[in-house]
Amino acid sequence: MGLIVIGLATAISPGPFFPGGIGIYKDDFIPGLRQFTELMHKYGVKTAIQISALGVLPRKDGNLELVGPSDITVDRHPNAPRPRPLTAEEIKMVVEAYSTAASRAKDAEFDAVELNALAGTGLISHFLSAHTNKRTDGYGGSIENRTRFLLECIESVKQRVGNEYPLLCRVSGADFMEGGNTLDDTKIVGSLIERAGIHAINVSTGWHESPVPFIQMSVPRANWVYLAEGIKEVVNIPVIGGTRIPDPYLAEQILAEGKSDLVYIARALIADPEWPKKAKEGRTDGIRPCTACCTCFDSVIEQRSITCAVNPRAGKETEYHIRPASKPRRVCIIGGGPAGMEAARVAALRGHHITLFDNKSRLGGQLLTAILPPYKEELANLVKYLSTQMERLGIKVKLEQQVDAVTVEKEKPDVVIIATGAS
Ligand SMILES: Cc1cc2nc3c(=O)[nH]c(=O)nc-3n(C[C@H](O)[C@H](O)[C@H](O)COP(=O)(O)O)c2cc1C
Ligand code: SF4
Image (tube, rainbow, N blue to C red):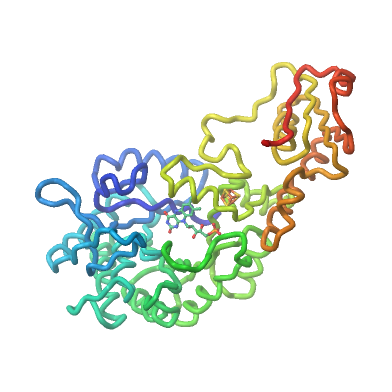
């Protein structure tokens, strides 16, 4: 693992617009952030924090006000409030907020800072994109002018934290928004920010509001790496590419072909936090596969704690631990779908003796049907992973068995788990 980037951390208080998010807009947050970096460093991991100022500013009366480069909203609701265009003085204030936030990150001992300039998730991307930036002053018009705000942020951050402190910038390779930036525009941004002293460019894809699927199961793996490749053509600093790279061999291939200098991996690490370790040790068939179902993203967008469809521990790492059982028991599990197999896997890891029944000739349950429509192929990897775990853990699997009370009694189980699915 090269670098763990956490985000997005707000440089200006977002009030109720970003509940549960990470804040870096007050010195009070430094001790908590330092606890995080200390933990990362204890395991020898370098870590960066991604900083963004969302489009809100406090008014004199203490309430928050939506602001932006122009009065353009990306909210599709017909009555969505429009942001108030920032004054030149306010722009300076926001630039200052970025540099203060970066210096807090340095105080909290982050190894690097990443400026969030992507996906419509902050003022920088709203300034960069002609979709939201209709200004007629020096911050609007040409792509060079639209990049001015970002360049001022970079200059201000560097003055504050020093030229040597690693500074990354994450951009959308293309906005995929009407009238928004194309790859050619982002190439100009890339050249400008390289000249301004950015040390690496992280190239993501699109905006949250884009009418194009970017991360869903239907998007081919590594589909967007060409954007990083395009930026690499015009800069000499390291370029990071990614999205839909759940497989270490694919990541390796992208690097070997020189399409990007590093790859970013997000959801595959939620699905299996041991992904890098297993990849390094060549245990790739033991990686719990991310199916790109986006359940994790939905939970965050709906402002719930993160959940993952394939990793029950995601977001509950401090609650759920797989510990050896004090007394191994005989466990009978009825149903060889994902829930039954996961129950069998965890119980076996705890040292219990498992018999898993299913009435079909193959393990997989409802997933075997779910994989049939087009674009659902990723689900087959989950069936494969779980079935492999049944073999590895020596779980007794009895297929084509219609289970009744007599069948169960014959097993003399201490515990019966019914995992026959919801109906
Ligand atoms: C739950 C969740 C939260 C995310 N938060 C951020 C974020 O704060 N900043 C950011 O730049 N990208 C964020 N992303 C996007 C990821 O960094 C990544 O670009 C995207 O998930 C595609 O990569 P993947 O296919 O490896 O998941 C988030 C993604 C997920 C699933
Ligand atoms: S919820 Fe779905 S997309 Fe998100 S990490 Fe888990 S498997 Fe991947």
